[in-house]
Amino acid sequence: MEVTQEEARQALADIEIVRRQARRAVAYGGAPYYSMLWGAIWFLGFLGSQFLPYEASGLVWAGLSSLGGLLSLLSGIRLGLRVRSPLSARIGLFWLSLLVYGALWIYLARPADEALVSLFISTLAMFGYVVMGLWLDNSFVWLGLGITILALIGYFGVRPYYSLWMAMLGGGALFGSGLYILRRWK
Image (tube, rainbow, N blue to C red):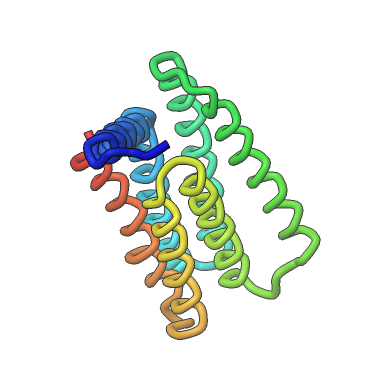
């Protein structure tokens, strides 16, 4: 069976329509809000790590992470009532599984210092973004890979300023990507 040039053009046009609809679904489904929320948390948490004593920065991270987890859960429930997707529950369970396994691996590996724990958690979260990108939109793959590379450069290249680096570049990239999705994908 041969496909005419017009049929091929129509198929490509249909694919483009589906691609745009998928991007809109991601934008309306809450992804940009999660990126902005966690970008702000990374920004504040890493600033705390850079400028506060170790014990105080740990409390800042615990408070911010708890608040972020609670807000993410409440947002997921609220958005789940508005946007139905067969992937929604699986995505939530994926992030919960990643969180539990990450905590287990940190416990088992016992990283040597706070910066190494931070690098592990950051790259683990970005692995989650890469997986989300494989499921939803390639933009998340590039965001996850980009922040992973920035985290490695910060850890190995500017170690005394690693937390400041991650606040500005890691938190900024997460927040900025959420803002970009909100403004451009709808």
